[in-house]
Image (cartoon, rainbow, N blue to C red; front, side, top):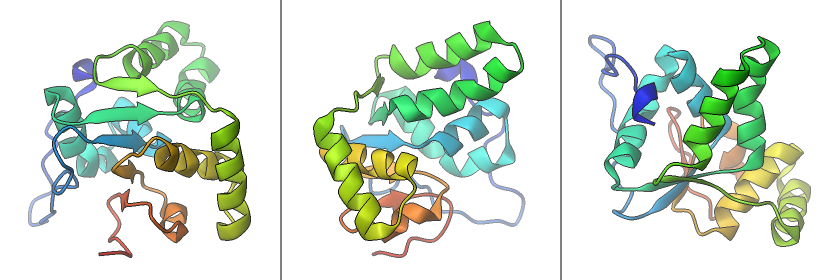
Amino acid sequence: MSSHRLRGGAPAAGRVTESLAVGIPDGACVLIDTNPLIYLFEGSPLAAAFQPIFADIDAGRIQALVTPITIAEVVGGPLKAGKEALAERYRHTLCAGARWSCCTIDDAIAMLAARLRALHRLRLPDAIQAAAALHHGCHALVTHDRDFRAVPDLLVLGDQPSARP
């Protein structure tokens, strides 16, 4: 991931932010949703909130998990723009790194996703993301999407204030 680090990931002047990585135990695994990765890869200022988590992944303090949904969404932009090599580089970064892995979506995750979707009115891709995080025992789901906050027993880390303690 180091080739995709942000330039100057500090918060804007006068803005105080608490690191999203605070409280993630050493060795923990977090599921990274699509939007923080797109922000990072595209150099968006919105990536700054997630930079401490990416730095901890790069340093080996925590592990990252993504789903095939995230891979498909992240590479979609480059593929649409005809940038096949860039799409492949993104896929390789997220699937073949020592600290990054892509999980499979099996029948157990599908069943859990269906339950989460029925109970919490999640869109299917979000339900699969949440189910994968829960199924794999992830410490948290890292996202910019508020929809996940409805799922009990799922710690959601994003740049929005958490609805849970």
